[in-house]
Image (cartoon, rainbow, N blue to C red):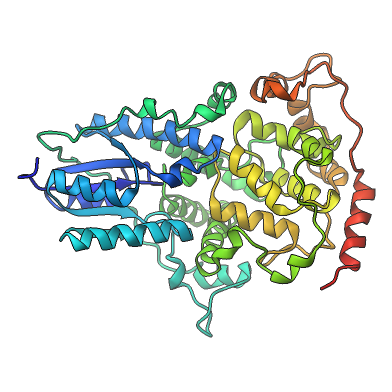
Amino acid sequence: MSDKTAAIWWVRKDLRLSDNPALTAAVECGVPVIPVFIRDWQVDALGAAPKWRLEQGLHQLDKSLRDKGSRLTVLSGPSKEVLTDLAKETGAKEVHWNRTYDPEGVERDTAVKSSLEDMGVKGQGHAGHLLFEPWTVETKQGGYYKVYTPFWRAVKSNDISEALSTPGKIPAPDQWPDSQDLSELQLGKAMYRGADVVARFARVGESAAHSRLGAFVASIIEGYDETRDLPWKDGTSNLSENLALGEISPRQCWHAGFRAREDGKAGAETFLKELVWREFAYHLMWHTPQILTENWKSDWDAFPWNTDERKAEVQAWKHGRTGIQFVDAALREMYVTGRMHNRGRMIVASYLCKHLMCHWKIGLKWFEDCLIDWDPASNAMGWQWSAGSGPDATPYFRVFNPVTQLEKFDKDRKYVKRWIAEGRKNPHEDALAYFDAIPKTWGLSPDDNYPDPVVTADKGRQRALDAYENRDF
């Protein structure tokens, strides 16, 4: 193929054909397009659930490409070497990708671009994962925003360009490069038996994502202000899973929400604010990448959090056996569906960091392994917000009471009954599915007694407040 010319679309977190700037740019080159996914070290570093979900999405993308006479080329190795070798093999003059914004991804992409340009190949990143590039939103003083509300005010009236159409044709080369079989990569291997359970709830691919968005706008967005806080109700868009892998673009979601607001649907603006909350997380990750690994507020380095994951309290939390129903139900929802209701995430995080006095990094790492909608920026900001160490964070002295929160948002215990089996004569099938999803080594059974609280709501709150009041900063 060395006497041919081609354009390469480097597939990352943009598993869609519509509104895909990198794919569109590759097609507009007017030469055969080679979509390629590279299993590099960053893919291998993913947690079990995100990696499994990525594999599912890649299979669906390959199917969509084949419907258009194209296909996904799958290769393994360092991205820089793989892409330069592929460009030489195919005669590609351009390589296009949609940007990532985490520091390691930026470093990788910069090295790839430089290497390609050294051999006379254009390497081009595009804006496809966010509504706004993080460096384009500045305060009046020229800095970055540290608080969400003024960030929202700064961007809410921005003109968001229309989404790009799906290419009518994706030109294929006469001869395809050698490719690995996607299934042979076994990206989902670490999920073990939990994969079959979570698969029943995952909605994979671009078509499924748009169906979700359509159903949300048609039936749910009107009451979104209220229903988004009710964990027992199907009251959210559930699009985090698809946004995380770019099976739908935030621009497509924004325009759907904007039209709903224009149509007078009451909850539409709140939905738009949630999209911008995701943008805010990326804004912070870009400007302060330490948010991923360190306390955003460095004075919290002296706070006496527990960092020992072997402690019985931590294991009880991970197993969904804290004896606090809201916490346990939310964690079990995650093991069965791969996702967790947002209200549940706040309660689960607050209980770990405040009632159990554990470092937010323990929770961040656990979610990174267990969530199919895992997103580096949102995960980090969410945990630091809950712990009190992050930007625009909930004050440490504000401790969610998981008992009163349950009474407020799950008064009839529909959520609890759906996810907790112990002590019930006829447990919900989803509550039983938890025992099929978790590792056998946990040794848990629906016939077990439900545990007493490892730390009660009142005792945990007081312990957290005492630690805060006696802090050394």
